[in-house]
Length: 148
Image (cartoon, rainbow, N blue to C red; front, side, top):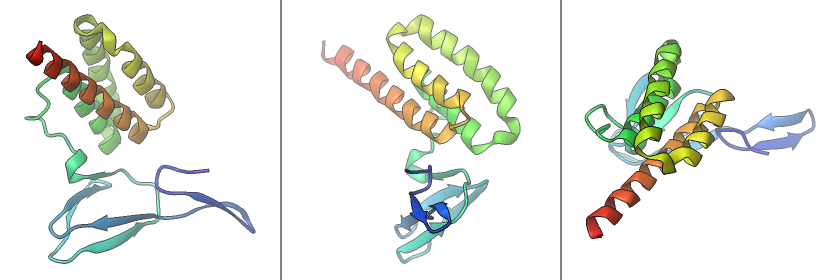
């Protein structure tokens, strides 16, 4: 059995969560529950002991980078995950984005269905992972058109 942050192990008291071990390279940044943390000059290992929004710098999309329909969906899901205080606003924007995306790219329907299922269950990190696959799909289509 696994949770979002690591594994669950069967102990004497039943299922218990095991912390997520996170290794950071020198200078690497990470978003942890509303704070941006930057590692110093040495590699470091952190143990995250509770359930908190967490994203590595490489997985964070900026507004400037959200320049395609699928990237805008990713950005919106990312904001739902990272800023749940404004969840309702992001949900409204997401609905508009997916309506527009489906009109332009109907082949994205399966990706969006998977994202929607995770969002409906409140599993924002898993939805974000699916949104990453959506962006990859869009990139593949774009490369196919360039080579055709």
